[in-house]
Image 1 (tube, one colour):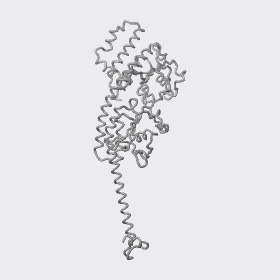
Image 2 (spheres, helix red, strand yellow):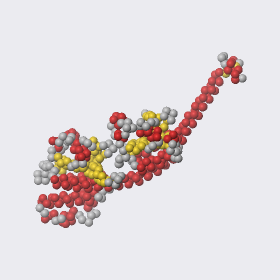
Image 3 (cartoon, helix red, strand yellow):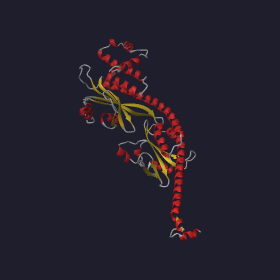
Image 4 (tube, rainbow, N blue to C red):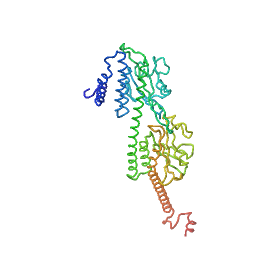
Length: 435
């Protein structure tokens, strides 16, 4: 098709663009290391190392994690001389490994993070070099059947980054798994051969660099998300003050805007019903009610006024796992905050609603910054919820008084009958008392 480049040509143009900004091109590097004077075996080893250095330089200039992944996978196939390379990113929330990019895979694929060879590699943190995949009981043959492919040998390595914990100690965290499949025999074109010890070493170097790239890219994305949070907060405040919102519209605005503010997956707003001592969610066609008690996360916050912030809901006795079991959804991190009737209030009896956000998309538990951001606009939203509630209550009372007045007028009209010269039969006693 005209106007559309094929993938290899696009990648070559992209690589040439990156190398044009360097003071040394590929030919210069080959001359410096005198590759032409080396034996074929030595030249191959140095050539692999040079390709690795080139890949590192190119990846350092990538502006997104998707671009960096593409560079790494292309380099993995080239250096390891394999047919396919796949990257599994770790999804901490759903406890899955996700294929975001890979040769031969054109859509996102998710697998449990404790299944298959990639899952074992992630759980153990150890490299796996398998010469015959079909003889390994961890290998899932159904994948080959779906893709009409034959996997023979596999080299799988964990990709790690290093972070500092709360005490300042460096911790090792696996953020992805790199998997290379079907190494081609350079001496016998068309034939396959097991991955070698040199391949393992090269893959280890590649995985270490990949961990640094993913970590740096995540830092950049965190900065970008922080900027978006500020813009999102201003938009929310603007929306709340743009016009008078009824309770339903107010809850809808909060529910729709909050997840983007704190990088969450889902959000629920519960309204306090003091008469029934319950919380109810006014979302969708089905109304959900839960008692105000310490037996649930939202009920606990409504009963005590305390903020609940947990990293794994399934490890908390107050969390009801029945919904997750029915839906297949995995609730992990949860943040629950009270919504007070006025900004100055912190009395649990003044709580008019509960905000519950679920699953921090990037990272573990919700942060103190997330709590401060939510509290900053919930003070506004709470006052508006209280005003809407009082307005609706007053409107209801006015309607009840009006209805009662109409009933009294109708009763008088039907009881007093001027054509008969007075009250209807049976009302004489009442008329005398009134007189």
